[in-house]
Every structure is written in C-alpha cells, then in structure tokens.
Length: 409
Image (cartoon, rainbow, N blue to C red; front, top):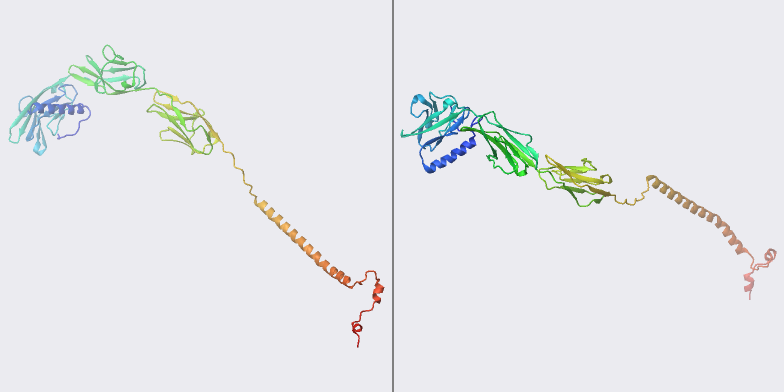
C-alpha cells in the first residue's frame, strides 16, 4: 500500500463533489470546533460504490495515523497505519487491498460491500504520544446502477417538441431531472410522465439548450446518468448582399459581402444558381463572408447569391445582378511593319536615284549646248555692221588704216 495524494479514477465517487463537500465541512467544523472528526462521503453507499473517509481538523503535530474497524482500539482490527514523520505505511490484519490512504489521513474505500458496513475508528497519535480519536458509521445498501437518457435528437429546431426518457434497470426507485447540474424547475411548457421517467418540452426554445441528467434514488442511494446536451437552434434568417456598385467597368476588382444576423452559420456563394468556382481571380475571405473578383470580365456578369446554413436550416439572399461594362477600345496607332519600312526606304532611294538621274541629265544637256552657244556668239561678233549689206559687199570693204588717218606733216 502506498501513500498517495493523486486524484481518483474509474468507479470512484465524484471527486469534485467530494472535495467541495470536504471544503465546506472543513470550514463549518473549523468555525464550530477544532475537534478531530471524520465523515463518510457518501454516508449511504450502494454495493460497488467507492466511499471516502474524510478527515477534518487533523492536528499539525501528528506522529501516527491509525485506521481500525470497529469502535475500539484493537490491533487485530487494524486496517492501516501511517507513520507521518517517515512517510511510511504499515498494513494491518484487516487490510483488503481496497484501501488507499492520503497525505491528509483520509482513507478511500473502493468497491464496498454490505459486509463493509459498520463503525470505523481513526486514532491520531501526537508527538507527545497524546491520542485523538474519531469514529464514523458506514451504511451500505443494495446496489443501484446509473440510469441513461434516451432522446431522438440532441440538435433540434426552435419551437419543436422534444422528449427525454430516463432508462433504469432498478426497481423501486424514484426519478427526478437535473438541468446544468441543478434540480430542473418544471415550467408550463414542460410535462412529466406519471413516474417522472419521461420529460417533454413543448415547444423547445433556445433557452432550453444545456445539459440534462436524470437521477434515480433507491432508499438512501442515488445515481445520476451521464449528461445529455440539448442544442435548440433557431432557423436562419435570409441574408443579403452588400456591394458598392452593381455596374462596373471591366478589369477592376469587385467585392461582394454576405451579411446575416445569425451566428454559428456557414456561408456559400452561388453564381447563376450554381456554386461559385474559385480561381486565381475569384477568392473568398477566411469565413467566406466576402467574395472578391479581381480584374472582372464580361463573363463575370450575372446573378450572385449567398446562402447561410446552420444544423437545421438554410436560406438564400435575393440575387444581385452584376453588370460588367467593357471599356471603349483605344484607337490603334499605325505602326508600319518591317516590310513597310523597307518599302518606304526603297521608294525613297528610287526617288533619290530618279532626282540624281534628272539632275545628271540636265547637267549633261547643258554641257553639250555650251560649244554651240559660243560659236553662235562668235558668228554674231563677225557679222557686218550694216544689216543690208551683202556678204560680197562686206568683203570688199577695205580695212581702215589708222596710219593714213594720222598722216605726215
């Protein structure tokens, strides 16, 4: 057997409840008395249950902690002995491998039977060997098995009727219901069957969502079912789409946002009644509430809708008609091709050659005409001064002699 302060596990009592009870009892006892006391939690157990012998007001200077069966200190009835200053445990004659001692002296008794019912004694020996004693009474009854809850659906639509049934294999039991771990308060929309085994809520509303349990009691023993969580969901309302402009020019970005008053919904986008196909231009935000279309084109024109859904219903928005207008085409600049450029250069060269050819022709024509002009000029210089003289007469004219004109004196 080992000294332990570890939490308890399967088949044991609810340790949160035990600890809460222990805390409350500790404060209550501390306020009233500092006397050493022990409590059985629960005091009435069914066969197969786990019971905690909870120690309250344990002295600080203890040396030995002893547990006995019966109300008398008799070593033959010893269950376990804890030597605190050495953290050592000694098993007694009545130890059954079902007992676990904790650091605070409390004793866990697992899987109790009717034979375990009776009185138990705690003896604490102080360092001065003074002894403090406390006793408790354990009651063990016929076993009671935990019930279970049967329900057709844990997620239902608001304003629907829902029924929960508590199922138990035990007889001679009483049943009551709990809501979020507290006793259920029956309202005018709730009905219980004759033996309380069936709880009907009609109509169920969102405030009825939560954890439900049924508890069966037989004598002093009670057992609770596992929790069943009901989720009463309101139907979604139709969403609507927000867009800055439904008529836009192509090659710009468009943002469509799906707005809804509902929570816990999923959003889906439709284009012309079909699911929107996502591409590198068509993207969705993280929660699908915004549809972004980059560089819109004429093929993006059409009806857009968003659909919101929860676990029980779905609704579509009214369609939004998106009209993509094409920008007027820019006038094309005439850029000659390479062949055109070659043709233009060839034409220029041919024109230049023609001009050169004409200039050369004119120059050569002029050069050929210059000798004839000179001859004509010479002839004109040699012609007689008298226009009416014949060539013969002109030839008979004697040249003028300057010498005769001067004469001799």
